[in-house]
Amino acid sequence: MKKIILISAAALLFALTAINPLTAWSQTESKQSMNTIYEKRIYAIKVGEMGEVKRLFTTLGWPAYVEGKFDRNVVGFFISDTGDLHQLIFILRFDSDQDRRDLWKRLYADEKIMVFIKQIRPFILSQNIQLMVSAPWGPQP
Image (cartoon, rainbow, N blue to C red; front, side, top):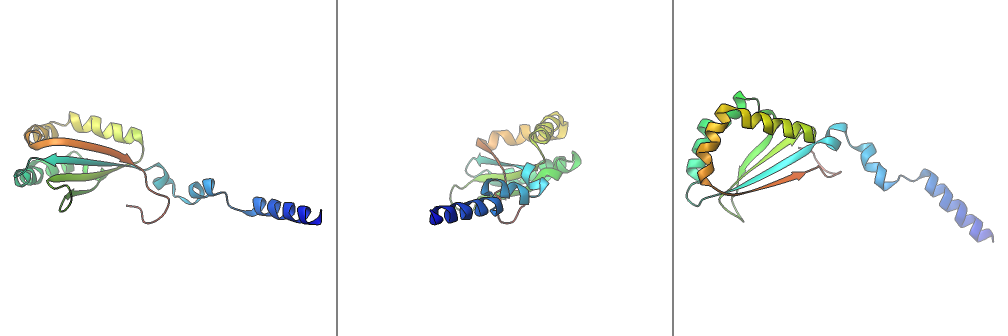
């Protein structure tokens, strides 16, 4: 009987003082990283056309992003070097889903962006879009 009481008391003490692993993450995460949404966009580019895609992004795309203030959401642009080749990858950061939807609405209403999109679209074979949230450990972008 004493062993059962001792075990029950120990379990109660643990339950009262232990950190619940399901809520510990949300208590330690910053407000920004808890709500931040990342959008990874992967565009497969026709073989042999990455040079033209780079030129279009450099001369039309990026300047239009900057002028329209869409660059504030850009984490980075990347070109695949191993694995699946001929891919243009970029990652965007948003404070919320509404922030994301608002950016895309504004972006597709921007004339300079649309000029760029019309020119780059023939070089794109496919696109893959993934929404992500930060893991509760390690560095945050």
